[in-house]
Length: 195
Image (cartoon, rainbow, N blue to C red; front, side):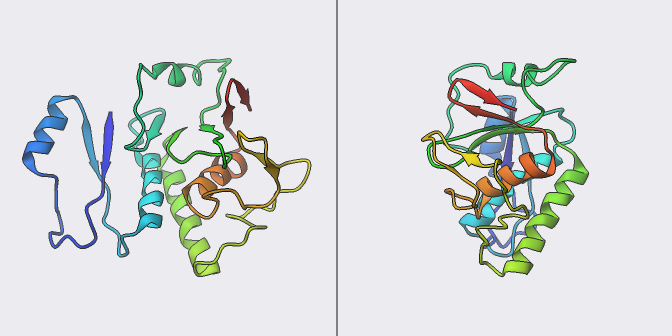
C-alpha cells in the first residue's frame, strides 16, 4: 500500500512532512509514504489532478488507485492478476463506469510510466493554457467523440459530448487518457467488461 501525501500550499515549511507518530503508524502497518509536490493553488481541482502522480510510481507494474473514502473489504490482488500474462482478461488500465460518469475517479488501475506521467502533466497544462479555465464539451481533453463511439454510464445514458459528471476534472482526463491516448482499457460496467 502506498499513500500519496501532498502538503497544503499554505504550509510554511518547504519540506513539510506528516507528524512522526503518523509516519511511524503507517510504516509499522507496511504502508509506503510517497510525498508529491505542493501546488501553487490548493483547491478541489488540483487535489483531483494529484492522483495522476501514480503514473510516476514506476517501481510497480500496475497501481490501483483508491480515494481515501473507498473501503476494500477483501484482497484486490486478482485485479492485478487478471491484467497479466499472455491472454489477460483485463487490459493494463482499468476503470469503472459509475452512475453518472463513464469513469469513476475514485477507483481505477493504471500502468505507471515516467514518460506517461510527464505527458499527462503536459495535457493538463496545455488544456489549462488553451481554455483558461473554461471547458469545451465537444473537444473535451483533446478528442471529439464521433458516432458510433460514445461514452456510457451505469444508468445507460450515452453521449458523444464531454458533459458527464467530472468531465472537466479527473474523471474526464482519466477517460480521455485510457481510451484515446493509451487505447488500452477495460471498462467495468456492473457485471460486464468492455475492452
